[in-house]
Image (cartoon, rainbow, N blue to C red; front, side, top):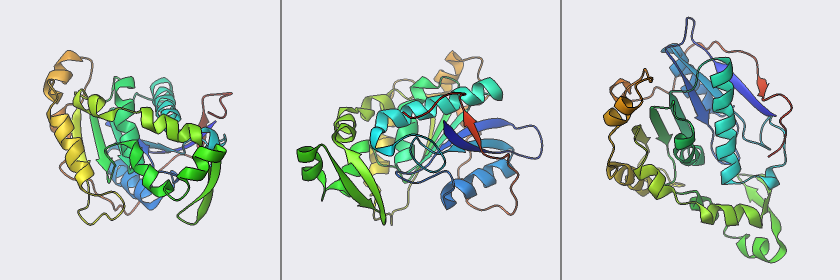
Length: 250
């Protein structure tokens, strides 16, 4: 099962959003908490969750990969769809942003996507593993130190990353897109933001045309705020939850 937290506004939500955390992080990072709280203050309910094998979620991280992250996002959207309302906004931090771009076509109700310091492609994380790549290829797996914590990475993780073709997905995104990136980011260079923006700009379907095609959607690209606040003085939320019943692991 996946562990999640719903940050809700005081009144009926204007819309629901789904937040994906960074690589090997959790739903309780400062970025996830502050942004979710700020959006809740503005009437947007935000579901943030732990990817399989991380935080409070069940499963073995070593068995996960970028494709399973996409599957987790779709499962989280299904939970919102069945219990509240399908997410209209997808938000991702770092590799979580790359994942929401890839998952967007599988969540038809989403009309806007926001990335925060995200790499253009999941293969960016290979740079974090560069000292262990040979060992992973030779032995099939290796224990890798990432930000002071040990994670077991298997060859299937590398193979899955190399199979991802995000450029075509972004080009056909057809949704409002906000790309947020600090020029001082020393881990994920700002050139990644340029590549995401450029790929999306080549799309033949604009967010407005896409909204027209999906007449049942209530949000539009014009409603996307120019900035996202990262600070809030109060937050209301429900306790952590898990879904779907009986689901465990990857």
